[in-house]
Image (cartoon, rainbow, N blue to C red; front, side, top):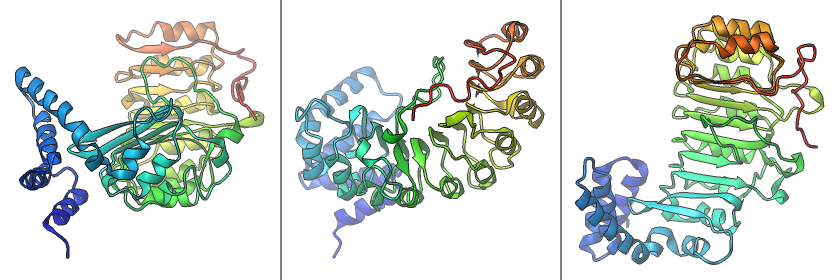
Length: 388
C-alpha cells in the first residue's frame, strides 16, 4: 500500500512546479528526522525574492552544510556512486534543487556510461530538468535505433526533462562570430527510431539541441512539443522543413538553429524550406533563426522580408550561404528594428554590399560580414569544412 511519502512524491513528480507540494514533502521528511527535509526547506527559502543579504548568506551556509549529509538520499546509491568526485579526471557536474537531482552535464570530455545508465532507472532522477553532453563516444555512431546510450533513451522515468543537449553547439551567443564547427561523420551521434520514441515521452521538453546524423527526422518534426522553445539540429543531412512548419504544437518555439552536414557541395537547406518556415502560421513566436549553409540566397532574403519574419527577428544568421549585393541591398532597406545580430559572414557579398550594411543606422545592431567569397562564386562556402 502506498505510504504518505509515496503520495507526496507522486504529486511532486506529476507537478514539479507546485511549491506547496514541495513544502508539504519537506515538512513530512523533517518530521521524520530526515535531514533532506530541511535541505528542501532551505532551498525553497533561497528561491524567495527579495531576500535580505544576511538571511541569504545564512541559508546558503546551511545549504552547504546539508548537501554532503543528504547526497545519497538526493541521488540514490547508484547515482551517488556514478557521480562521486575524484573517481576519474572526467567527472560530470550535477546540481540539487528542492532536494532532487536537477541537472547533469558533461560538456568537456565523454560522459561515463554508468551515469546515463543509472539515470535511466533511478527514482531520484524523476525531476531531472537538464541533461547536457558535449561529446558522445564513437562506438555509438551508426546505431540509429539505439542512440547514444540505449538504457537512457528507453527510460520512462525522465518525463520532467526540460533541457536536452547532445553535442557541442553553443546556442545563440551574441559574441559567436564563427560558423559552427564540424565532426567527422563516423564520430557523430546517430538519432532515430528508439530515440524519437523517447523524445515523444518528454512532455515538458523546452530545449532540444542535437549535433547528430538522423534517421527519419520527420518523425521529430511531427511530434507534439507544445513547450518547446529552443530547437537546434546540426550536422545532419535531412531537413524536411515542411513537416516542421506544419506542426501546430510549435507555437512557443522562439529559437531555431539549422546547420547541415552538406557534403559534395549539395546544400540541404534551400529556398523552399526557408519559405515554408517564414510563412508558417504556427511558428509565430520565432525570434532567433540560424539558417546556415543554404543556397536560398537573395531570394531567401526577399522571402524573409516579405513574410514579415525579418521584421520580428532579434537574431538572424545566414552565414555560409550565397547572398550577394542584391540581398545586402534588400536587408539594408528593410525594417530590422528588432534585430540585435545579423550574421552574413561567408557569403558572396561584394564591397558595395558590405558598405551598405555597415552604414545601416541602427544602434546596438551587430552585423557580421567577414570572409566573403567572390560574387561570381556564390556557392563557394556551401561545402566548406566538411569532413568525411
